[in-house]
Image 1: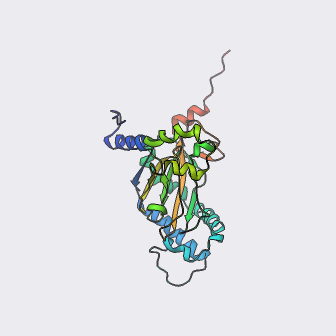
Image 2: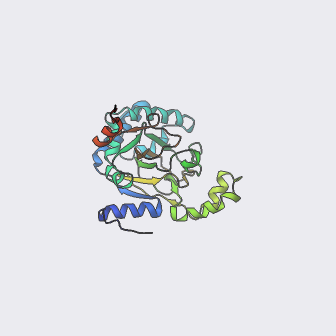
Image 3: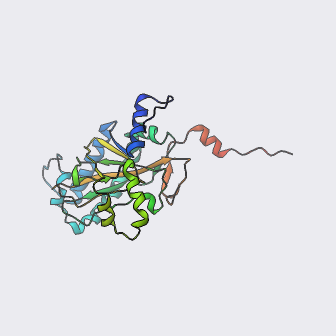
Length: 269
């Protein structure tokens, strides 16, 4: 249902309505140079880790990394990349800044951020990196969380991920009682006609509601997908199994909140 909030700008109303009606939207990244820097750093780290010498061009390098990493070594390689990526100077700060406008609109400007950004690498024809259909709230995440999914390559069809839009979610909700014994493939088949594959280019970000069913399938596109993902939420909304201080860290508390959290009533008498 579309609605216009008179307290918000026209652009904020559009973003909010898109998010409410579908549960996700794709937006252009602000400060593209920050994401370019992250990608170039990961390319340099990857070449060093894989001992790739010579004047290999950075153009489309990540798309073809499957030529240098075998599937049985992919997870170890990915874990090393996650550690090194999160160790880059100002990495988390830049991740937040390039999508700050969207987060201000969707969750507000007092934000808790996931302490470590994740990295997904999905090579062609590899079934070891699959994420079956699921919603994060089904395993204890707070429904107040928002995922910011940023690709490092252009993503399309099975090289990307899929989401069941919120306006079609009622179909699967009504089926839960009759599908409680279903496996993930059966669950996917039940909603396959309604899911939306995300088409997104490098330089854009996907902002989505992780309480909606989503996942990926075997990548049939002949190129490797690299994507980062990180959860954000408003500091003062309820937390699920992912607790503040353990999984989340407040990053933009305002002075009034800092003062209020420290405030004690004066003793009388």
